[in-house]
Image (tube, rainbow, N blue to C red; front, side, top):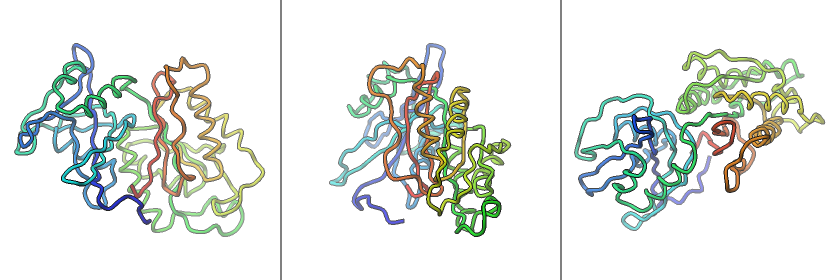
Length: 315
């Protein structure tokens, strides 16, 4: 897939990593001796690296922490040596300490409460990011809606189409998806009855020790390469509302035809009867319809939607 990002833009990613301390929530800051500054762990993306991997890798390398990604935060942009640098950030829960070893790039780290971190941070852009992080819940629950990976062209009737497997590219993408989706933690896994959907989440389910649950209401039988039929998929919408109400980390794999209805139902269910915080609620991610292997992540807290993001396999 061709990329439209400027070639002179430096791609980077990082995270505002948090944990629960004795005196409340703490975030981690790292010190760079080269610049004598305090900031959040972040770094440049390697060639061909997905930014989700960049964010978690840099946290592991700079702070010695394994994290679970939470809500998407605002990206920061600034110039470095005449080039534009864009850093994408996520809130991230500290899941495990891998051990911090001081080195020439990062020689110290500090776990601090939000007020103390705001004082120590060296850059105003990081203080703005910290304020955004602190303005909404840190501990969130992901609901992930995934369109299945590549499965070739439909051949035969509905029964044959349900059995259509992933093709070679789809199998490779399913393995990549397992790694990407694992960054959001362990989720309940629900799939359409179509083999191409089940196979798209099977590697993730195996990696997290989770069974794949088959949901007939999420099964579309007209085929992803065919025009939409006359069904309105309201049974899928009702099932989505039921799942939202459970407030469990959940991954769902379905089809081009019914995913827009399912996403709309989820957005509606998150707003139904909730004490919505001040300000405009997050909307669905912008952009064209989900491509094969693309997914939407809705993060909520206490049943209220706090962020939404879209992720494609080519980032």
